[in-house]
Image (cartoon, rainbow, N blue to C red; front, side, top):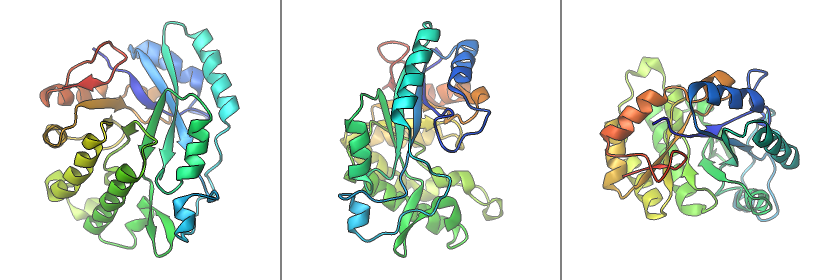
Length: 273
């Protein structure tokens, strides 16, 4: 069974190009047999709201000139148009909320003001020396092991400090940028850090994403998720180009099944143990 793709970006996300469109993603999903797509557009901020914890802590926001506010009304109108145009495909609305524990008030105001079907939580930047710093840039400041450990420490704060999201996206995001000169990335080297995050996520009753844009998680890692009480996984291509819808889902399904996860109540559901 091909699972739903619960992590898709379209032209409504600030970091996509003309290779991403909502209609193109829907057409691709139908072509490859993906039964549902969730357009989880980026919800990121470069200014603190009045009640955001990050601002109260005196942090300087992330210096990223690419980040743009999400045009929620325009985005939701586009979702509705696609639902009318592609009745054979389940189309979910959603956002990927970045650093939701630090931008709690700002992100909460957007999410609370609309009916989104799928809300992802993610961490792309961490506090460092009084400001938010993007994870890729940190490899120029610290050794790779230190980057991962700082990331996991902040990821734990995200999980315990925000109840805004349903699914934790790309669990080990900095792994994408692991330098080849440092040798092979070994999940086992960070088992304690993984388990702390997974334990907190499981205790909150939320879902772990299998992100197929990132290096694929192992059966062993999903075993840690089960050990810590995790009960469900979500599949997400993290597509920023239409052709990537459902990409490598065949591999991800094999890994999920080997770790004891099976399709849920229907083909649109999360996979469960």
